[in-house]
Image (cartoon, rainbow, N blue to C red):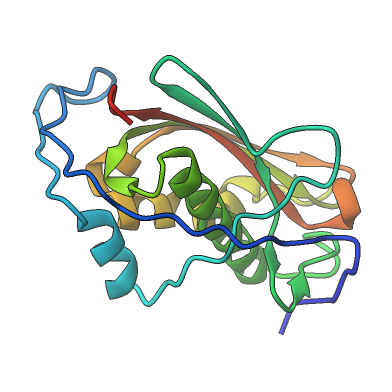
Amino acid sequence: FWLKRDSRAETSSSSTTIEQTTKSSNETNHHSTTPFIIMAGVTDKKLAELGITLPPCVVPMASYVPFVRTGNVVFMSGQIPKTENGMLIGKLGHDYSIEQGQEAARQCAINMISAMKEACGGDLDKVKQVLKVEGFVNSTPEFTDHPKVINGFSDLMAQVFEERGKHARFALGVSNLPLGVAVEVGAAFEIMPDA
């Protein structure tokens, strides 16, 4: 109901094969000292339970790459609310409700997970922690519910990755975003050393 076509954005197919069984992760160090164990395929199973089919990783539309890894940290480029049918274009506070904005942020999360799967060589169980989320909401000056909008992204990360999905975050309003989209979200992830 909120999607508008935009021929400037492109997608490309990305197929990967899960070949490795992940090992137990180490303790997290930002909000808990309780170790957790990840069983092979658990993240893909969770996606299936939620009825989510990951789209192909979105091809960058300018001079950048989808992600950069340094050590065990992966910095993800911003994801927009794009599907095969189009994207959400407009402003919160004028064109769309908070609920529609949350759906847009959730789509950003789905696209982020798709890109992250590529960064992990096809195995999302190698995600050790979602570290930080950076949320930008295209909104009117009067709109102040940016955190509620970005909850659409954060809530899905927690559903898919559970304890590993809890993260630090900021959410802010901006006067415009690339292609006029309503939401854009960037993130940083920690992955297993052998990923």
